[in-house]
Every structure is written in structure tokens, then in C-alpha cells.
Amino acid sequence: MKRIVQIAMAVILLNLLPACAPEKKPETKMPETGLTETPTTESRTTSKKKFPQDKGPTKINMSGYPEQYKEGHELFMGKCKKCHTIARPIWSKFQGEQWDAYTRKMMRKPGCPVTPEDQPKISEFLKYDHKVREKEIGEFWKKLEGK
Ligand code: HEC
Image 1 (cartoon, rainbow, N blue to C red):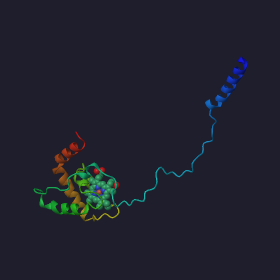
Image 2: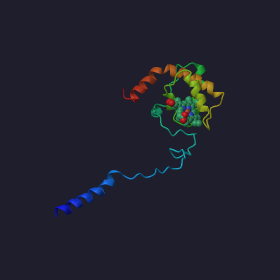
Image 3: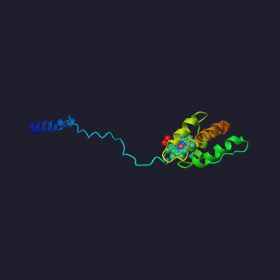
Image 4: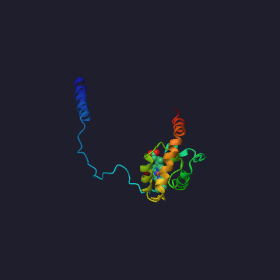
């Protein structure tokens, strides 16, 4: 009887062995599509990405601003809200020359109503405005980030 038990144990152990060394399956290579995500058909004329400042106030108090910036302000308020809230650039941390580059970048977006004539006017306005409101913008972000 003892022997039968021993044989049974041996059989069980032998059956368990392959489980410890799992057979190697040849790696099935997926056809190389190079795709990590499904292609987007979203038109780039509207910005789906949300920016934290998008919910900020949507007005700039222009009292005290020199006359020369009024036209840039009008163009800015009228044209830069087509694809995202106007709060996005109003509360952006961009300063000085960053605005030249960024307003040009915005102009290249399909459907952007900003003309090559508008662009420097808007940019000059934003440079002045973001310098004047530098502190206010700083406070805005501090609050937003809970600091
Ligand atoms: C044709 C659509 C369109 C118009 C018009 C447009 N934008 Fe944008 N804007 C975008 C998109 C899309 C993004 C998101 C970032 C990206 O895709 O480059 C964006 C992002 C921004 C940002 C956020 C950048 C950051 O990193 O914080 C600012 C600031 C901005 N735009 C300013 C402007 C200004 C100023 C104007 C007007 C001169 C303008 N936008 C007009 C499409 C537009």
C-alpha cells in the first residue's frame, strides 16, 4: 500500500513539473502599424484641450491703457476667442517676445481670422498688457494652483 502511495505521489509530482516550466510559445508579432492610438479626425480649428486658465475672467480693464493699444485690444477680443476662451490668452504667463512667436503660431492654425496686419497690433497689445498685469496674473495662478 505504501508503495502505491509513493508511485501516486511521483506521478502527481511529474505532472506538476511542466507547470513550473511553461512551454515557450513563439512570440506572435503584430503587424507593425506604428500606431499607438487611433488617428484623430478632429479638425484643428477648435482647441479641445483645456487649459487651467480657461475659466478665468474674460475682460481686461482698459482704463489707463495708452490710446495706441486700443485697436490691438479690439482685434484681440474679437478674433482670439474663436477657438478657445479669451481667458486663455488673458491669463497666459507669456511675456514680451513670446507673444510675437505665439500670435504667429495661432495665425497658422486652420481657420484663424487673424491677418498678417492684425498680428503685430495684437502682439504689441499683449506685450504691454501682460507687463502691466504681471502681478495680477501671478496672483491668479497662485490662487488657481492653491498656493
Ligand atoms: C484657429 C483657432 C485658434 C485661434 C483663432 C486662436 N487660437 Fe490660441 N490656441 C488654439 C489651439 C488649438 C490651442 C491649443 C494649443 C495648440 O494646439 O497649439 C491654443 C492655445 C492658446 C494659448 C495657450 C498656450 C499655453 O501654452 O498657455 C494661448 C495663450 C493662445 N492660444 C493665444 C491666442 C491668441 C492671442 C489668439 C489671437 C491672436 C489665438 N490664440 C487665436 C487655437 C486658436
